[in-house]
Image (cartoon, rainbow, N blue to C red; front, side, top):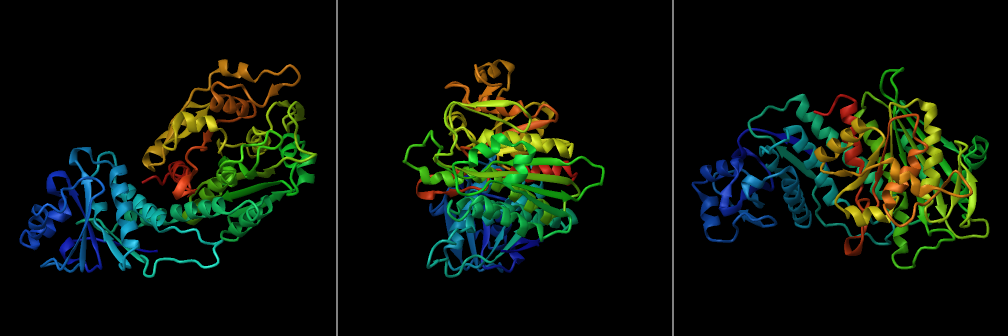
Length: 499
């Protein structure tokens, strides 16, 4: 989609459709009041007829409004003014974009950006408007023989900022929104592909394609022989049950000062997870193609970083494999040795994500990182605890955890911190190895993070469990692209470009 910024008086905007907000009790927002005044109370007169009172989720299309240049006006209900939040405005804007994309309107101007919202700034509102618009027009039809896109989809979006001038901050916010949206789209596309197409080798090829976009980005792909020589026995034990060879994808972006320590993002890249010998139930097993959403999201965050040309050093690591049942696959009771030298008793072969992540965490030590964040669809327990609203967050550093929580709140891609107390480590005890790969029924998300923490003692580390947020099920089945927005906001802040 093409993006522009417009300012001035809303009545002078030449657009196919102008989106304006209405609060409950038919109270007009600022830009809507200006239009109402120019049109001699036309909007107020229409609202008095009772077709709309401003409740959340209401929409009303108007034509031939006197005194203005816009061909149409779409009134959007925002709910009570005193309860206005960025989330509620973005939700209303999402509904408007969806409706317009399915109509014959190919160009729209969003005046909701001009609304003052507590604890937000204009740059944030612009960035989120772009990301939301791209999310609503996204379609995945790569695997359909006959794609049927809208006949006249939205192609141009103008963002109205009121009387303010088009500053560099404003323009940068729009370009940041575009970059993050493209990163989200990449994550969605990779995640939505089926396991027979999106294999570890395919993920590696996509990383190489991304590497061609910047001279600052270096791509390395470690093969199984190289991982074997490094002692990655834990990671390689997972791929033994598959005909697809495991890959360790390493992406190094050097946009910061040469001696500046990099941020390292690690994403679980299980391109299909049948559970191994501890086979999953058949129902909804197709959704286990989404077990690589962590890997897809960190690749999406890298894509956004490259496009924004952030002045930061960033390393992305994606351990990628399949987890299938086979004569050579891990068996319950097997003991493997990780790259760190620690031994692991595999009590459940379906707890494989932590087995590939632990070796990736050890590999990250060589980069002397400023911070490490791993992202994984790791535990069903996280879905039980937090549902689809928030990603689970656990960390060995409170300051890093606070950074990620703030980034999630600002990007409307929230996380919630869970405890990582030493008492939970007791659940990982094994009679035969240094640790077991599961900790029993209680606190499954926490004990999974406790397992990973044993490989993250040499740096500041945080873990994001996205099992509940990475994709939707049911009629709206599909990847969400989360937490690319959270990670991108985190990187923007680290790079000194949050505003």
